[in-house]
Amino acid sequence: MTREQMKAMSWALNGEHLKVYPVRTKEFYKTTVNAGGKPRKISLCYVKLCIDIGNGRHVGKDTYRQDLQMTNKILEIYTHYYNQRSK
Image (cartoon, rainbow, N blue to C red; front, top):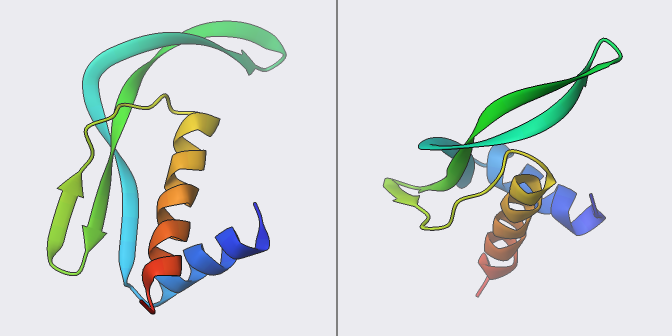
């Protein structure tokens, strides 16, 4: 995580300006995880990202896997709104 991303997340969460969180969909995908040294196959839901801004709630159209893809998109959203705050 870059310094700018850390500042953006801190600004959004500490000031209660904005909150981004995943919402499960009915679509699944299979992935492998290491549990106790043994690889296991599990099923996870795809998620959509929900953005709470003030009194508004917006659910995105795109779906994401619950991995680095989702994390990067959340950081991108926080950074975008952090950069737009003074415009």
